Length: 240
Image 1: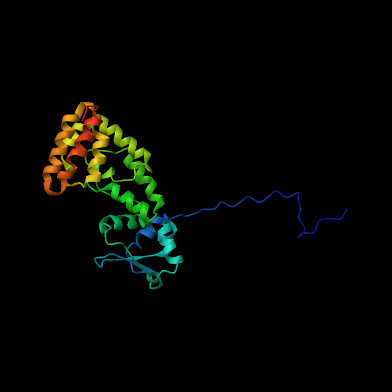
Image 2: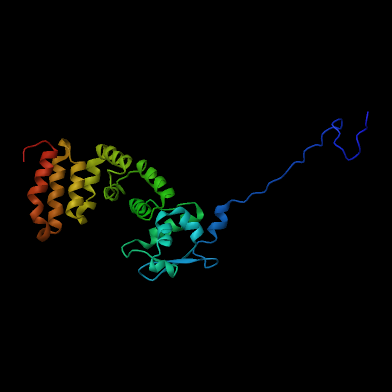
């Protein structure tokens, strides 16, 4: 029988022990966080109407926003110069909070902030990863402080928020109406509030709300008196 040569495979030898490997990892968001509003490696700028500029990075923002992806793929004149101008009506502080969240993967806000406005910004600029989380937050955190702002959302689209508002209204309508935050509202918004909040138990408060709202700017609001009063009475199932 022919002997195996030294360089031939010999299945009579025990298999070599597999070497253990060590993998070191680093959380990516710490690296990205250092790039927020950092000119280093920035390849475009976000410019507000006030002239304030944020240094930005396509590789971070475009992968998280269909809006920004479209800006750079559509050949917009602004993006040819690597500038994206933000609409004048946008809240610069809230927009900056959302942009920062794309870098840090953490969205930090105070309870006094208009969270529904963050939802609207996230929807408009297609920050889809944060939109879902903001909506979920509001579905579980409707308060007297934010309920009026939330009524400005498209509640047909955000049914979970709509249901959360209705639950809160059922429990706290008198307290909410007595805050009188509605006095500065436009007619359409005020009418929406009445439709959601008036019931048989609080018709008298609803009528007071109408009176107070009209009195706030009688010259321009007096024409709504009949329509709103009728709305309240019908909501309370009383004859107009």
